[in-house]
Length: 337
Image (cartoon, rainbow, N blue to C red; front, side, top):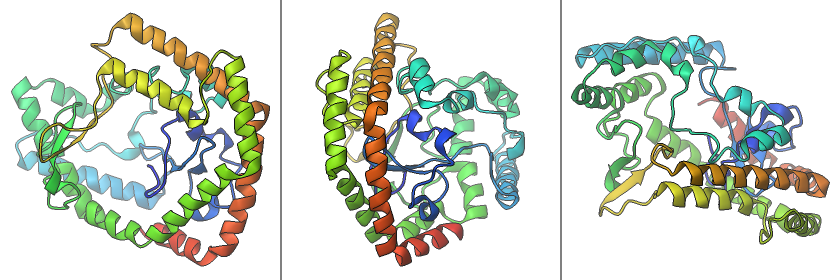
């Protein structure tokens, strides 16, 4: 879950749980999973499947499943309520639990090396997978629409009318209805909740810029760039540019385009499928990604990470002192959601 109002990164290495015990001054207020990325931006990550959830949260998830099953029955489809605690371990858990250097050596940044569009083998333990697979192509579309709403389209892009984006009245299917019953209107709740903290998010964004502008970080960035060039990867001036380069190459390879060309439409795309991608070009990209990520990690370890952390913790501490009331209000507000 990306922190609203702040820059983010999709780097799986940055979301590794191995350094979770070392929390920055802001983490106490921003919640579990908060991280100020050394590549620029902030993020909050959570694990799915009920892992680490409180009993109260698990109970809510069970209610959502039960309500979804009843709604699907009314719509003429069979759906089995799956208790959250029975969800299988994600096929990506082992990868995400690797130390950053080992993740880089095996997966690079996890951009082209992991096919996010492919369901894992562990998904077959969900009885609803077999139920849906047994349907005809036409019935599957009807099933998806009943379960996920009028804009459901399998694993492909979802084209939503621009005037409906963020509108709580949009039909999101049985899952959406069930979630609304248990949690309230997600769209309106999210908008109302985060709008209260717009000023805080702007201040956090300014803090991130101060960290990146700190002379210690500026000098370390130059050293990192020179190190990467010596390793055969010249031209990168900012740490986030390395991941961005890999993502750009993958987008070109898959033809991924997140911008709808249809007037009045806002297109939301899921992860691209690698099924129709040239296998040799994909293999070349994966090799490039892993080599770049390994060099990136090694060069950051030579001094950039330490310099960034010193500047980050020092400036975060000052920020907490100056904005404690706002941070406490945010922390308490999030705890009540």
